[in-house]
Image (cartoon, helix red, strand yellow):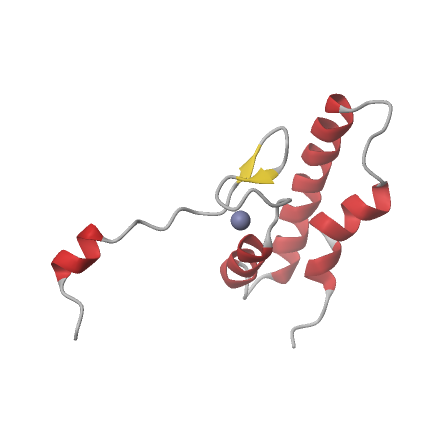
Length: 95
Ligand SMILES: [Zn+2]
């Protein structure tokens, strides 16, 4: 059965997987941000400018590190883990 315009209006709107600061958890799925959906969305948004994606993610990493260390100054996140979480995934080649 084909979907109608009415079906589209009654469907649950999709919410973007954005970070909840200063915890840096996804506002939708509650996973560490960027979650899998956020990573996929970012890859799509920056598909034609991977350098801009890296620059954006560097900025996000800087903000996240400041927030997360401020929240937990004595046992903050591992810098290598932060790098992999926020930036390392984007450096991987497309498969
Ligand atoms: Zn998410």
